[in-house]
Length: 556
Image 1: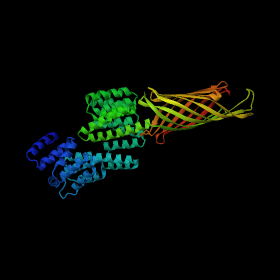
Image 2 (image 1 turned 30 degrees about the vertical axis):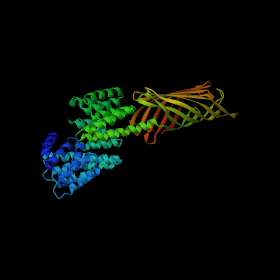
Image 3 (image 1 turned 45 degrees about the horizontal axis):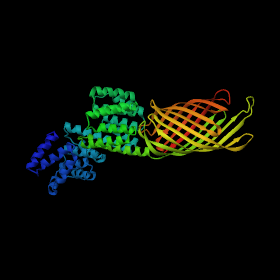
Image 4 (image 1 turned 180 degrees about the horizontal axis):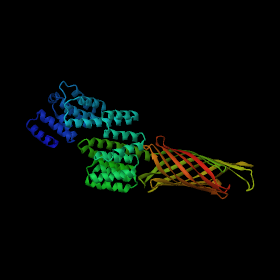
């Protein structure tokens, strides 16, 4: 009997007449497990009288069935005990028993006992075609679990060694080559991974097509991913997994509303799909819609618990990971943040500027911003700066005079989220020690104003920044657009570059700058490093000069 529902109905009828029939008990338990009704299977085990249960446990097949039920209900210790007892049974285990035992260990993620089971099965001389197919699937699952474990420990060398060992026994195995793609992506070798994906694609298997599309998206080959999605949907239609990948493709391409629309439409057709709920939760998380994300993730978790088959455990694990990510990101975005800035700018036209800033952002409310509900921050900080420049006292003079301002500026402001990014306005009062050639030093002070507008445009970020320093009546305006062009697979490190333009000066001096900037983001140490360089023209000197700058910004 191959249909678990029919098996369960027949076993139920037999148990109604013969409550202690061992075959009917085992059949009922196995059918409930196959149907994904894990809690009912666990309750059936609990309901068995101790004596009856001990009698049934003389059979290694029943011990394996018990272990499987415990594994599927998260009772790891009891599952391990029953599966180990089955392995020590004086009665021989059939190939089917060993395969069932292997699947139970796989569901527990325990690769060492799984490999022992596979070793025993490989030595079996009488595997049927169906059993050989199951062994092959278990071997692939064992490889996948082992690579998961090694990559979690950052052991890429061990992962590659495992794959090469597998390929020696199974040359050109496509599943092993797909694992190699995963290792390449984990090691930041995105082009190598993508090249291997292209060699594997197209393949007339749904799971392989999904893997290829996901790998293309992960390696930022978005255009190719879109092409492959079109091919896959032409072949397999609107299957749930392809809808999820299509929404991710749209979101990565900047079309968040379209991504949401197709997920909502798909949920109307498949309201019980855990994958769709979880995809919508991830999209909400991407936009900082924490309440909606948590609601969808919980719905996905509930649906995963109602599913049957091997996929429900993966969905349940993904739901748990998504809920944890929501909590982490919500806590990070709603808390206070410390900042530290250090930098310098030097002009070939005899000017140097050094600056530092220390401060904090403190949430005082929230507004609907570009990505959902974002905090409104009170920004309190203190700047320190040293500004020195040299100039000719007259047009015909060859000698230099110099001026230096060394000061500090406490300031307070507010940062508001907007539909395009954020805006900030700050005000304070600056003090500086002024030193000029042939002039006694003195202290000057004045109003300080600062503003910043940040807008996410076309996949990059436009930043418009301006400030006014009252004690020298000096205005500074900067526009910079940076577009990301590289990141590692974990998005821990990324590079962005683009043009910048600067205008600055007061009633006696003006300067115009144009150049390029490179930003290196280092998420593990909550920092960004910025380098800029370009050409400069000023009213103080004729011709064209140059400038360079460097800054380090720490935000925690």
